[in-house]
Amino acid sequence: MGRSFAVSELVFLKLGGSIITDKRRYETPRSTVIARIAKELSAGLQARPDLKLLVGHGSGSFGHFVADKYHVHEGNLADWHGYAETGAAAQRLNRLVTDALLAEGVPAVSLQPSASALCHDGELVEMALDPIVKLLQHGAVPLVYGDVALDDVQGCTIVSTEQILAFLARYLRPQRIIVVGEVPGVYSGDPQRDSIVRLIPEITSRNYEQVRQMLSTSFGVDVTGGMLSKVDTLFELIREQPNLTVRIITGRRNRLIEQVLLDPDLREGTLLHY
Image (tube, rainbow, N blue to C red; front, side, top):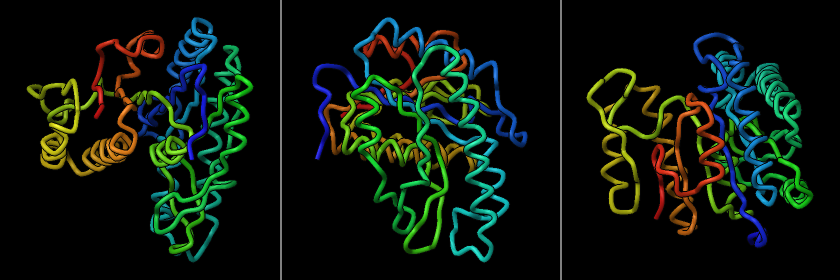
């Protein structure tokens, strides 16, 4: 089932829509942040030429505004124009990220998930793997993103970047996943609303249920769904692959992405492991 990259380390890197866009403003990229992250990834790959890297990013204020307008995630659309618009919006942000990476010498190759993704009742069950495997073998950086997808139960849906990376990880078996967002990790509450919350440095099989309880009671509706869903998706993957580690960090600090990419043991953010 798994594809082997035994001679090198395979890392998945997820850039949250909240860090590369202003999620409060329609189709507003954080161009300076995107350019800085591209520089950091370029520096990391130059320092570790043997590293195999796959990058995924969220759609932020590009895909979400349109998807909410047309309720694409609910499926059963009367008018498929909304599906097409949502996919086009996600592509517009992806073009900006692709161009920024290419400008820094990163051989990023964009792969449109909706071109091959199929879902069953909201769950991603099929997506083309061979192009990704070939690109990694040739030293390129596959670039995927949250997108629309066809669904054999509800007609269509939205697949998140976490869903895509989790699906790919079951076949490609990366050693690490790095998740980059606004906040410096997983907190006991909402750090943007509560000044006394604490960073949770580790989530393991021993404290996972306790952390889930914190996330389900301490956050507002939007934030809860986001972080709780991320942790659930990623920890389910860790249970299947006990050697996998996931680190959740902030994208706001200069050079942190580069440092974490190069040093798996750097104690930053929240580490999820079995």
